[in-house]
View 1 (spheres, rainbow, N blue to C red):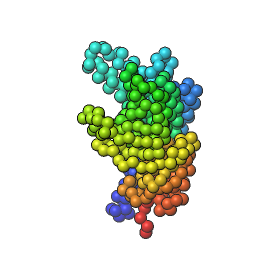
View 2: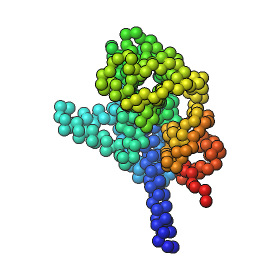
View 3: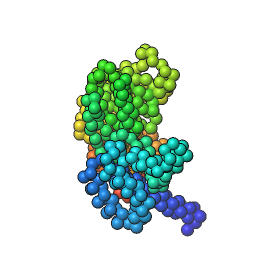
View 4: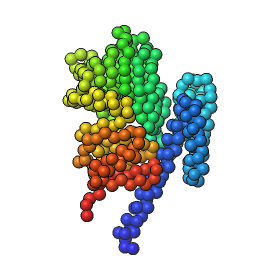
Amino acid sequence: MNDSAEERALAAHADHSANASLSLAEQAAHWVVQLSGDDPAACAVAQQGFDAWKNADPRHAAAAARLQGLISRMQQMRQSETSQRPARAALDAAMAHARPRSRKGKRVAVTAVLLLLALPVWLGLRVFPLDYLLADMHTGTGQWQTRVLDDGTRITLNSNSAVNLRFDRQRRLLQLVQGEILVQVAKDAQRPFVVQTAQGSIRALGTRFVVSREADVTLLNMLESRVSVRTAQQLALRDDNDAAAAVVSAGQRLRITAEALGVLESIDVRSVDDAWKYHQLVVQGQSLAEVLDTLNRYRPGLISYDRSQIANIHVAAVLPLDDIDRALNLLGHSFPQLRMRRLSPYLVRVDAPASP
C-alpha cells in the first residue's frame, strides 16, 4: 500500500471512529432528555428503552455509567412535589448544598450540575443546549406538545422546541429558545402578547401565527390577523416608533435577522395549517441544506452533510415528519445525484459525489 493509500485508509478509519463516537454521544444525549419528561408513563417506557440500550453494547454501558448520577437526580426530582422541570429542579437542589448567599458557592454548584450533564459536555450541550434543558416547556425529537396557558392562549411546540413564559400584570412574553411553535393568542387588551427570539420581537393582541428559529434567522408565518415586528437592533435602541415596526398580515411570511427585516412573501395559509395538522414539511424552493436542517430536528441522531457541496440543490416537496427515513428516501429519488449512507441507526451521511 503506498503512502497515499495509507493516508486515505487512516483518514477513513479516523472518520469512522469519529462518527461512531458522535453517534454514541448523540444517543446518550437523547436518552437524557427522554428520561427528564413530565409524563410518568412516557418516562417508564423511556427507562425500559434506556436499559435495553445499555445492555446492547459495552460502550453503551460505559456511557450510561457516566450519566447515571444525572439520571438518578432527575428521577428523584420527578418524585418530589416541585412543579419545576427536572433539570431546573436539579440545578436548584445542587445549589441548595452551597451557601445561598455565597457567589462562590453558587458557581461551584452550577459547575457541579454542568459536570453531571457531560457526555462529553461539548457534544451533549450541542445536541441539547442548557437553555433547552432548563426551559419552561420543551419537546424531544419527533414530539409535538399542545398546551393552553393560564390566559387562554394555545401554543403547540414542534419537535426539539423549547420556550420560556414570562407573564405579569403588564405583559405576556413568550421566549422561543429553539425550534418552532404555533400560537393562537387569547385577546387581552391590557396585556399585549409578545413572542421574542434572539433576532427580534413579534407583538399581537389576538391572532394566530407560526414562529420558527433557524441558524441566525427567525421565520414568521401569519395565519390570521396581524402582528407588528421589530428587530433585536431596534429593541436595543429602544425604538418604539410604530412606523419603524413591520406589520405582517395573514397570508404573509417574514424573515427576521437581528439587524434587518426581510421582504414580505406570500404563503398558502391552508398548506401551513395542513402541515401542522398532518405533521408534514411543505417545501417551496428551499435549499436542500435548509431542508436537512429541519429534518435533523425530527430524527434521533444526526443527518450529516457538507452545505457547500449541496448548495445548488433546491427542493419543492411535501415530506412526512413522522417518518424521516421515508422523507430522506423521497429526497433521494427526487435527486439521483445524492448519496445517502446510513452509517448507523443514528447517523446518516448525505453527499453529492462528483460524477467519474
